[in-house]
Image (cartoon, rainbow, N blue to C red):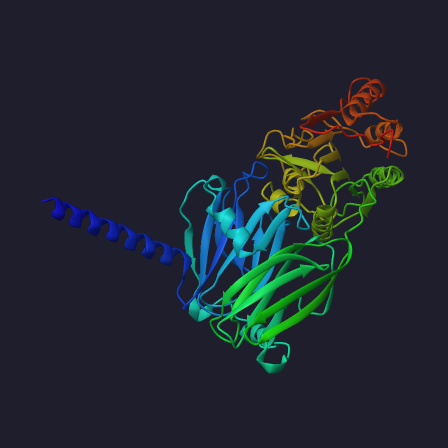
Length: 504
């Protein structure tokens, strides 16, 4: 009886061990028929509500929520271009070569310091697997599986990839070879401190060793790398932290036939942020299909001169058509990625519709309410895109609270004629209106409108918090308009902000 029980427990133990070994084998080895791209987004507080879209070769393949992960399985070999998109104006690309039978780890996040607030980075296997295996990084243990269409694959650039992987440096006596995927050229320049290194290894031996040096300091070492085939026996990926100036990358490969040394130079020159922030100022005056405005160009020009004197980089735009306004706003948001503070000022005709505020380009011809959304620009959408940049401070000033300039529309919505509506300011932002919600403000009789004039009279005062500045503007405008115009703001500022701080 005892012997039977012993045999039973022995059999169970062997079965458990075999099952564990089989599971370990399945999790660490993938079939040679495809490559697996593990794309993951560890949980983050900032930007957590935003859902990312992952694209391959400009084709959407999946969405990526905060704390989620997916496996993208591709059946071809070659160069793949992935894009992470958070909005129309906020995206990040990563391009690399894929080989069947390999796993690749790509991390998506906000604010990792890889060149912009949005981060999409190819990780080395050790670092990427450690992040992926940390259960506290994710909402669920499961990964969504997405398969590439092998007949119409996003991995199409096979010839380009092979030309790079087959371009191994000539070595004597069958010593190990290397093909550089990134950096491709002997000398390269970058303005990003985190550099993704990728190389393919080749050797006549079964195993090889690798040592990686950055500026003569060893930063990685791998022993007994198993080599499968000669085309790209091992795809080595490693992120390195560059120092400012010239950086020397050295890789030493060794196997039973000897050793080989490979060099690359990378020049890192960070972008210099000499400005305190970026300001876009738009003045629309000469409207083609409605009344002109006398002071809007003067207002935008005077504000641009003031902000320039206070250390901001300024973009001044005048009398913009719909197409010009679209391009200008897009250019501003693209350029804003490199700044911590964004200022937006608009003087011109504005209108509210369906609870939203719209800026009107000079060529707009509105004949029905439904044309407002397609021919004008939603200030709330602009503010939302600015908030995606994760700036320290965003300030939007709207001197556009005038009467509805198109009298033939508005009968479908009772309050379409009455100025602008209130706007919620996202965290870190302040929105200032020339007058209270639902009220209108005049264009003014002097060189500048009353609201902008009082801002200009106050903006140079040193060490004045922005909230206090607009409070003083409100008092002055109310006094000079005999309470007919009452400026208004909504604020969710997190940091103190001064147009003219005591120390700059």
